[in-house]
Amino acid sequence: MHSEANIIFQVSIAIVTATAGAFVAKLFRQPLLLGYLAAGIVIGETQGLGLIQTGVIEPIAELGLILLLFMIGLEIDLKKLKGSGGPVIAAGVLQFPIGVALGLLVAPLLGFHFVTGQFAPLYIAVAAALASTMIVVKLLYDRQELDTLPGRITLGVLVFQDLWAILFLAVQPDLRNPAPGVILLSLAKATLLVGFALVVSRYVLPALFRFIAKVPELMVSGALAWCFLVALIAERLGLSLEMGALIAGVSLSTFPYNLDVIAKVISLRDFFITLFFVTLGTRVPRPDANVIWAAVALSVFLILSRFVALTPLLYSFKRGNRASVIPALNLSQISEFSLVICSIGLGLGHIDQRVLSVVVFTLVITSVTSTYAIQFNHEIYFWMNRWLPKLGMRDLDEHTGEMPVVLAPKPIVFVGFYRHASSILHDLLALDPNLRDQISVIDINPHSREGLSRLGVANRYGDVSHIDTLHHANASHAAVLVCTLPDAILRGTTNLKLLRQLRLMAPHARIIVTSDSLRDAAVLYAEGAAFVYLPRLMGAPEVAAVIQAALAGDVEEHRHEAVAALRERDEVLP
Image 1 (cartoon, one colour):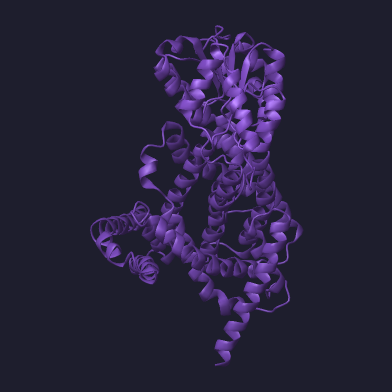
Image 2 (tube, one colour):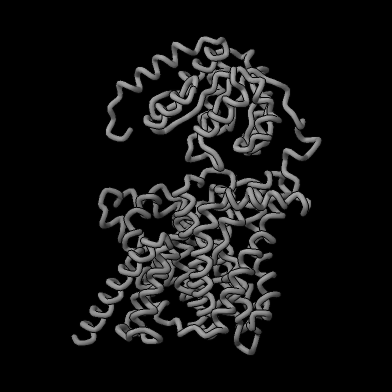
């Protein structure tokens, strides 16, 4: 009874302290993970107050690790990988081995060497080659960049990194006996387990989950039972429990009830994963100068290695400098998966405590720096792009044979092109197919431009926030200028700034801009917008009709009606 009370007491202390640490991390706009690690350091035996013993709560915390890997597997969408495109596949397949190779070269310079039974350089290299899914997805979601070209490339690379991590977990137990036969046997076991899991999830589990779908408790227990069943089979095969959980998650990733499982298991995972990272924090020894120096040096290497491993690969696919540089900025941090791998490695005796400490402090440093790198990724890119041509990285608008330097003047110019613009263009051409030759588009997304070229619509690569781009696209000669990108998607400018810029450049043009806010729409009208597109209120056919009227010089009636309707709306959230 005393032992049980002791466990409850220590878990309680861990959760309360972790919550306090998370509040502090949130206050400083840092990942909550740092708050959990800090809590472990404060209350742990190694350098803290000694309120909890690592050995007591470690078995419970291990459940968090298993559930974390199960959830990571659930979020790997194998179907999407097939259609992810050449840049994502190439970057995903090659970034990890290139990063590991660079890490193996640099690790000895940081004081990590191979010794008998120890694999510190390999663990440092693998840890530095992985980026944080939790941090990146959260920050890109907040910035509404997940569905941009750099965002999709970033997510694709993260998914492939998880697959590489699965392969490493498969061979990790046999690193002390790295004979080709042993490695191949481990890979064969992992392949067999993956095959078994995929077959069962396709032919057996759908019927089972259909039967229990309307009973939430059974849905949760069924998903967890599958997770731990595959984990136990993995352990019987000589693999790790963690790898089994990851495979169980992957096998359910294309499952019809995938989102339902994630929604129901995520709270349970968050509880146990909090204990896992607190426990990890209790192991961190008091850092000496060598550990801090190694962590700082590893952080610098990690950031530079992302540009070496990713940027040239992406640039070779001619998707533009922005899509080549920003994913490297987005991925410039170490992964929570790196802590998992190093934690397992410490348990297997492959590394010592110093390696784990360096990785933990590198996580702290790169989590902080990458938070700002992602927040200001486009501003950093604009600064870097001044120097990239000197390194031979000419942007798409500088390649003389791909597009003319200056577009021929067109009456209608789309300033930026995204989904709203795609729908509006379709409806505009449906109203009058002859308008095709009177339209040009400025955009940075190569996929959009490829589709526009197939459609026969003139287009030019360029950043609409740059005045030179607008000049080269002959925006000053347009009769109608249309921006359908809301401020949340625009980078380096806003609809208000763009409106003022375009009015100076093309004072006689009718300018149509976009707003998600009724209040901002009123400001845009006051600044002289011919029409303000409000996606929450208007459809593509309506805006297409407005553009057609603006081209004919008859947009005032549409404008008057829109302004009057705007004044009549008394919404809770304008």
